[in-house]
Length: 141
Length: 144
Image (cartoon, rainbow over all chains, first blue to last red; front, side, top):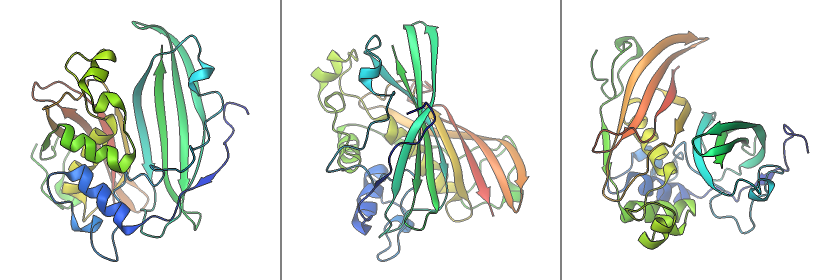
């Protein structure tokens, strides 16, 4: 797989109304979340909701971005992320994800020889609508 | 410069206006709930010994993604009924220690028209009780 080729697609289980409600309660704890996330029969998910949080099988690794691809850089830090949002997730939605390497940069930092590994994840719903993209950067050193 | 109020119309917002601060004092009760929904059960978020072994002497520490959620919450509180978050980005800089009071802050840095949508760019951060920047970022908001 080349550095910019998308990996295999994986579908989430159908999103449950209770999944959304529990997510909202967790991220607003101890205050009550906004009604839009909890209305019976009609909630939307918070933008950061993750329908892939509890997989029965691990999501496919992105070739070239796994820990074993960096044997000389065993330590890792989460460098940050950038999300773009489309339509919101609603109960019953099935979200499909696919990922690829966005970029790998090598730089000398105070941590020594460092790799900045950026990956991109793309989500669409069952109607093919754009839901979210996330570019994440892991710092390996 | 002024503080943006909930559901304020686009035309009433000017560059330099700020978000009302959005705060949480976080500890294991917040982190465990987040771990339970995001399947983020890492020992260093739960056990002081594991966190010290991971070179954080103060013990268990919070998830970066929960601070990202707090940024969304701060935006939702202001724009939830009138606009949509189109983009949100952040860098994780400083660890969220147990008992930290985290406050999301934001300042409008740009306004522009994009087709039928009226856009805002907001510089964000999540600061701890010492004023340290733990999670600088940026949001793009669309009124449409």
